[in-house]
Amino acid sequence: MKLIIVLMLIIVLFYLARASYCIITKQQDGEKMAQALTWRIGLSLLTFAMLLFGLAMGWLHPHGLA
Image (cartoon, rainbow, N blue to C red):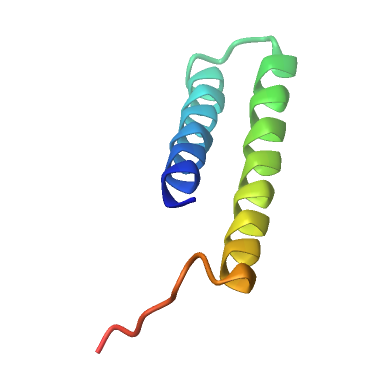
């Protein structure tokens, strides 16, 4: 479960970098940027839902920082 969440976060960072590249290079194709940001948001929400599900099922255990 933890490995899947880490992989999803890496994919989210990839799509963020892809959208940033579209902005930096000032490509006129806004559809690619919008698609990359849509994927990033969707995967972020899915990752958050997986974290909540993992906590509810007892697969993930939060810990204190102290």
